[in-house]
Image (tube, rainbow, N blue to C red; front, side):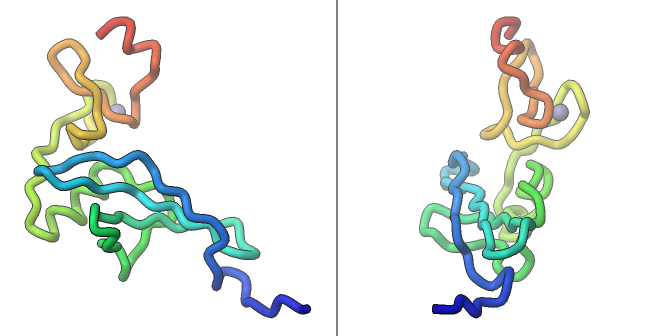
Amino acid sequence: MGNTSRPGSVVIEQINHAPFEVAGERYFVQELVWNGISGRSYELVNSHEEILTEDESFDDHPTDAQIATVLEGLGIDCGMETCKFCREAVLPARAYRHDNGWVGSCCWDERLRMTA
Ligand SMILES: [Zn+2]
């Protein structure tokens, strides 16, 4: 039995990342692993399993700002906050409270939990 599937044409693994909530709706990032290639693609999916990035999936896990761009394009207000360390825009649902500010998953380290 020869496998004639073209590399990059078949999803061989699907990884659903931790869900998060924006404006009362749950979303998650779905990571797709393809046959025969090392590149992966990442989709933003809503709680109805609808892929919101069908036309243009991400090549890397999207940043909070990229996720917000997709959601705001759909008219969803993400209420973005700013990461106190790198000043990136972060989604509160994916960020951590630290002192009086926010730390995004970009800069969060479990050690910070001790000092929050
Ligand atoms: Zn950061």
